[in-house]
Length: 160
Image (cartoon, rainbow, N blue to C red; front, side, top):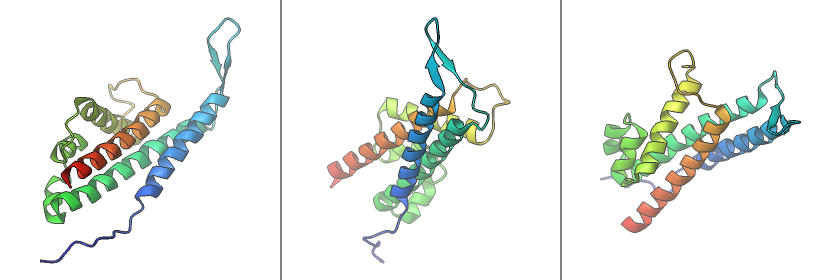
């Protein structure tokens, strides 16, 4: 039997950094587009280049890239590569359960992320979908991957 390598070269941290930096840029650009309205509320200036939207999409995509890589690496360590291949095509929620994550809020957040990412990235806007803003979905995506990272770390520490 061949031992799994102890050190794995990965871009995991870079993927997460791209997601978080793009989210920060999106929020900064969005804040610059808003000013107080004369009678209360806000006036939002139109950005024809959609820079905040673009950075939100980058954050969402790279949160997904990070999550896929994290789940792969964790799965290979936990189950082995051959066993991981059996769950590779499962949803995030199904993988979470295999990894011992059963928090219903986290499972619901994963399902919502999967659906939102698919709608935004695969241009499902023409279908009957929920109203979403890329900026809000980017915030939720980065929060989700942070929560999953902590949950997996906690499960690994309890298992060792």
